[in-house]
Image 1 (spheres, rainbow, N blue to C red):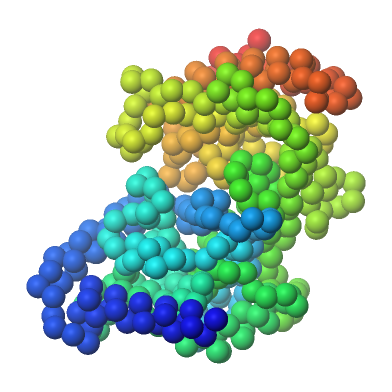
Image 2: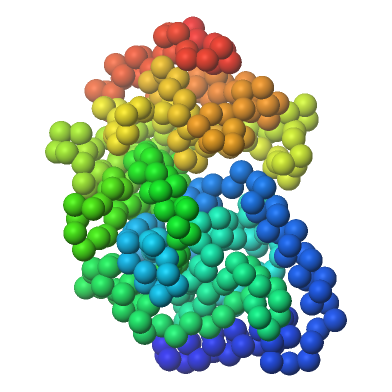
Length: 405
């Protein structure tokens, strides 16, 4: 069965190369137009503020998973040149999704954005850190190249079949598990000038990022070197468990999430959070072109029932999937689709889209507070912290004074 799947995938790849990119066949008259479109794609890719790690995490959370599977996402960075491309380091991404379909592969060979959403550059964001991304998934063994393909004179979207033996053998050695490899593996040989950048981003991921993912239940980051003393990336291994779900009300969901850091110290490696997730319609006066297809804001508030999990020096109070560096002085976390500054360290405070979100947060907070006080599912021992979460302290930014009481 596995051999048949590989054979079918290899045939599909050959068909795409022949029919779409005129490799091994008659030259397509649209090849030059496609080449120009790809040039525009590359210009857009490098001009935009695209955060590759955000894209990969979001893609994994959008993926489909088999019933009974705890969706997991693992990042492993190693100094090994797994792909023999001369890379100084390789980033491996493991995801136990169902695996790539033929439709997914067709989409990746197009100039447009991912089939999953028109708002993200998606997989193509990996070209920011890797010139030759490799994918092993569901029988497909392929790679793309930033440089134009010699036969078609087109880069980025022309796929090529990869013989797996050497590469997958190295991947299995690094993965270090007696079980089978996850269904989807990205092997990203890193550009030399991007190694430190990638390590810094991996080290800055807070454990609480998993709070705001809809599917991923296990999330880990680690570095693999022959000599561990050369490791510079902070490890993380987080698992989440939803204890219960309360009834839906006010276009909102509320539930408890329990996080465990398998690598953290014994005293502070667990914390439970009361989650309040509410939807608000986007007001016409807050619409912006970059979010022109979005009709609602989803605002999630997380209330820790104990000491928050900590990995870095500060505990961010505002997330936009990944944490910003904003410390709000509030005892709860705010997550929403904020538009960020180019550094991703701060939100654009004067942006009308963000202002619309900020105007909705006090309403979400009041609803969450009432829900926690009235709910029979919230532990009585948590109620003192509920009242302590009242935003009575001076906020860190003038735009947050709308929450202060």
